Length: 415
Image (cartoon, rainbow, N blue to C red; front, side, top):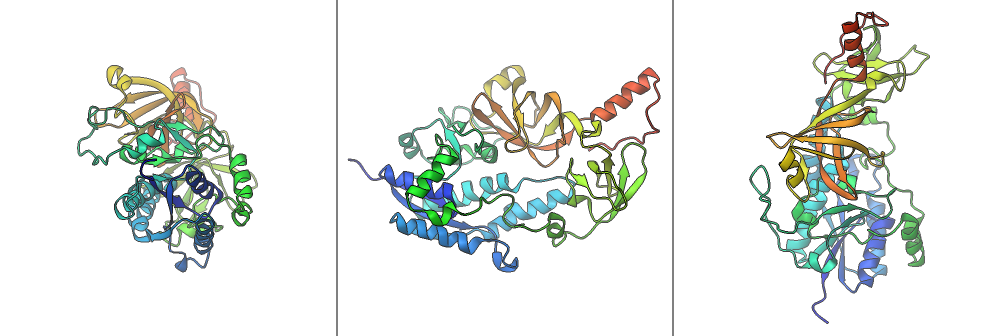
């Protein structure tokens, strides 16, 4: 037998990463477990379960006879993920810290630590995702520095690693990996690629990991914990009171503490209003939050958007898009939402315009537009601009026909 391969496994103290380590051991690799601390729970009234998670990860490593390390990326997380998140909220956007954490922490700092400090041949995580590479191909990869040009030289990596959806489509986490650098993907194993969550839980139980099987799945952003989002964000951003305005007739419906406490599509609690109102737009120049009286109001539906510089995982950009400037694929901007057909148009600066086959509810600036073709996750770009809403378009059509609108509508703000 050849050299024993050394794989460094990211351990979170949960079922998925624990079974990942177990599978790697069974494949005969030398496995090292690393627990990452990204948020300092000391200043958060004990909301984060970091200590217990670290204990649980350590216990699994002992049971599997694996070396265990813990690293702190609290400083890096604050500078590269969290401060950016606050800036996005101030701009009126709704960011996705999970995608940014994978990009900046797990597949940059952790990967570098595993390769350079621990001397790993590859890293592994408990994500439900698949790549085009066999294990042996991953071990043979050499580190390629990130390109400095706008588009990667397509001949520099002759056979790029591709990211595919996992066998368990419901648990598939390619959405969260859509900003993974090509270099990192080529050095990563996803042992849970072909397994379902139920099977992973069964394996954990049979391996004697009862202490983690009973744990509640961590949902949402760890640093917010069980707290109300508005209370949390107001600890970091100064309140910016403003009016809640009806998108239909411009009436002031109530007040709010800051546009950043709302995201598009959510129910707006307005004092004195019996009926539910929903957030349809925000104007950060004057602090107004626009609301509509129904959850499926046409002011919530749009079918076009622009992203920032799009991150293509394998081909940068895809040959089909270069050839014809347009490409058809599938789109989502939330994990687990159904995939929607769309047309992609490439701009000279690397950003893209997306046109959806059907308008979608509550497209949100700051979220990531993630694209798929078949099983393959092509990459993602942050949504920075939205096209007009169905409501605005209907008003325009009514005006052309000379039909009076249902009310004297105020013009809707553009995002």
